[in-house]
Image 1 (cartoon, helix red, strand yellow):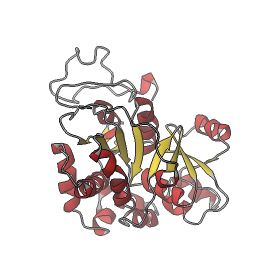
Image 2 (cartoon, helix red, strand yellow; image 1 turned 45 degrees about the vertical axis):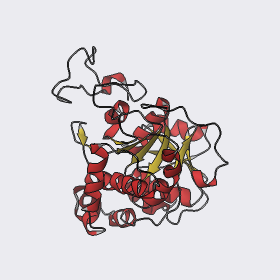
Image 3 (cartoon, helix red, strand yellow; image 1 turned 135 degrees about the vertical axis):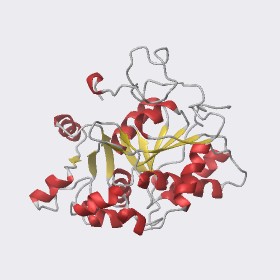
Image 4 (tube, one colour; image 1 turned 180 degrees about the vertical axis):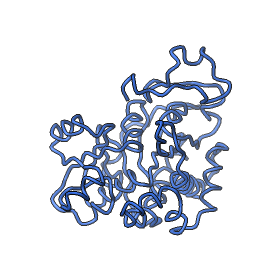
Length: 302
């Protein structure tokens, strides 16, 4: 996000004062923010919304959840052996990024629809279901991709999760949390027309699914923050696929002609891929060599 695009912090929290943000501007994700009580550092499993929230809650592992549709599309791409490069902007910079990495640039949903050509993949997970001949993909999105791109600069190991691979991600995280690592799960949310965060219930469900499976998979209990436990409660109240089809995001996509994307996104635990950001691209952690040295612990005791 360029400086002129940064949202102000007015109304972010009633106790924020100029001493917290002298320039009265929200930080980029790689500009670490510390607000008393907001970092959830007393808990090993954490949850916070969107890019600004992700900046305020440091952790060893950051799990980005954008069910409709970045992380769902990401899971489908990795299943098909496609390396995915997240990117913040959908403009000439994305095209240059694709050229630099010898990758295909995913176009917008409506652009792909107007072309009527299956060779033009997009943020739509359905567009990748049958695609052939693509090895690398630059995938811009205004929410999940932006957060993932920026979180990588913060020092966390970034993981992509959705409903399709929630269980796989939780199983991959469990031994790391058992070893003392901290995790923040970041539901991406959407943007209102004034660019403020719109919490998206489907991302809350996805976050809750990961956290619930992670807590269930630990042999010894790990502390989850109230925010993380709230996501679990929301997930336990969800009914799939009905609720995803009838929530605001699902209706919006279905009305625009993308009901197949919603149906794909609602399939729980059908994927075993664990997307991790390695350098500038997402790869499947289950296919990578064994890890190197242990991570430095972030935002909590060592």
